[in-house]
Image 1 (cartoon, rainbow, N blue to C red):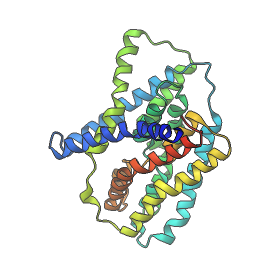
Image 2: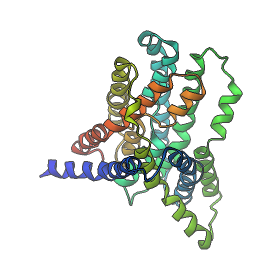
Image 3: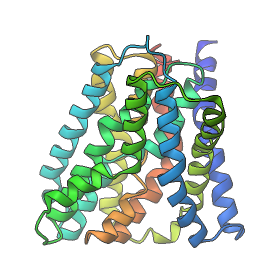
Image 4: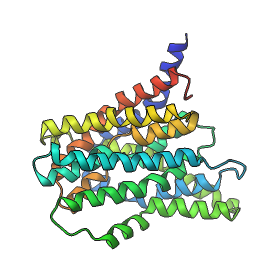
Length: 316
């Protein structure tokens, strides 16, 4: 039965991620790990494990594999258009200025690095996933750039262009990706005594990041504007992927490339949206609630997006 196969594929893609998050959530509730421990471990994931994972994935990519410029370019264009649309919508939907920047980034900025990349690796464990690693270079700088502009635009401060550029260039995920890409271009062969332990460290990134994502969920923070939260969750998990993925399918993007776009546009709101809102004068409680709810509901919505495209024969 084709439909049963499609359901099993979708379940196998999403369930491992949800299980890792559930274990993290349970560990936090059982006080196995505390708030400070989650913050410190998240810092290690962001500065050490994820950059290593991205670097090693790109370095290990076959030189015969062609760079998928269509998928990378499409993602960059859609991210820019979605942010542009949100800049137009936010003043019309948000009464308070401090909620506008948070609303913009909450809908337009996904948790691609922590939630999306593991999703692609689970869907295509043995395929060439270089496009998913290179996608970090394509979309993460844009996420950081536009989100920073959005938050600073509505907090009353003057936009500091150098601060934005420095933040993008010093992003560990960008550094790890660019390092891997440079070494790949130079055809550098890493000695096995270095390659094996570094690859092992990089492999820690996916399960640990998802464990910590679950541990960081705090449903007590959902006290923000319910109307904006509803719009934000629907925008992030339903409307944005509906538009972006439908157009991608229409122009012929398939397979691991389409799975990567599902990871970019259907993932929940980026966890880093919350600390950014705190630091840049946005409504931090609303930002936290957006992260919690989109992460909680993404298990269902991402499953449905994968199932839909699997049933159409476009992924899997």
